[in-house]
Length: 125
Image (cartoon, rainbow, N blue to C red; front, side):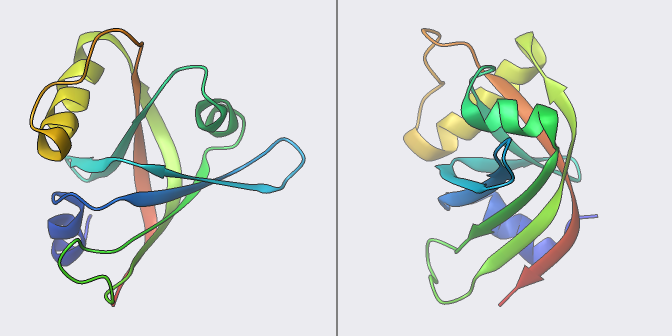
């Protein structure tokens, strides 16, 4: 279950930093838009992106972010991708996340998938 204080941050517009593992075990960190879907943390990406390839091979993630209104209150999450969504179910989430960040649905010129992350560690503050 997501901590309610963390859910409030995730439902805002923070830029999150997603860390995954490269094939050689080195860390790979990228900024991502982030949101929630039920009790999962969600990110969107291209199906063939480096982060998607990393997560299909090893689903473990670490995420760090700060609330837009308080950059001195960090949020740190660790967990694993438990499901991938594609097609219409993914686009519903992609458009919801895009609308909160840029005020409109995501363009359809690129394919997108959604990773559902089940957090096993949640820290705020």
